[in-house]
Length: 88
Ligand SMILES: [Zn+2]
Image (cartoon, rainbow, N blue to C red; front, top):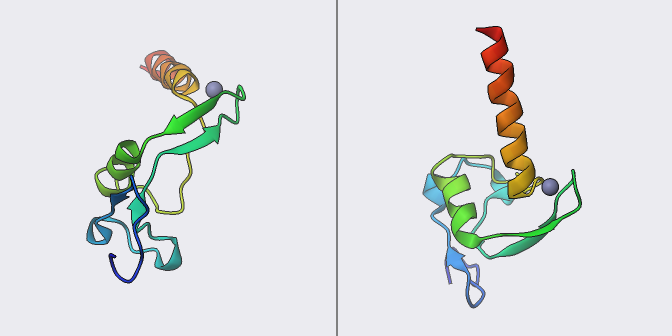
């Protein structure tokens, strides 16, 4: 139990103090989650570890969800990089 919330088996308890305060959106634990990429439809797993990093290290808003698979993220980053190069 953390803050009165039961942590499911296999989940990582969250450190709420490291998250952005977001009321009901704050995450009390992280668990591997399947999501579908909005761009290509690939089903990928957003791991509990990756979520912990995303919300506690990067400080993403706790209501954020994974939307793009790793391949599409790579492509998007590359496109951004190229855009930057053109602007220089
Ligand atoms: Zn994708």
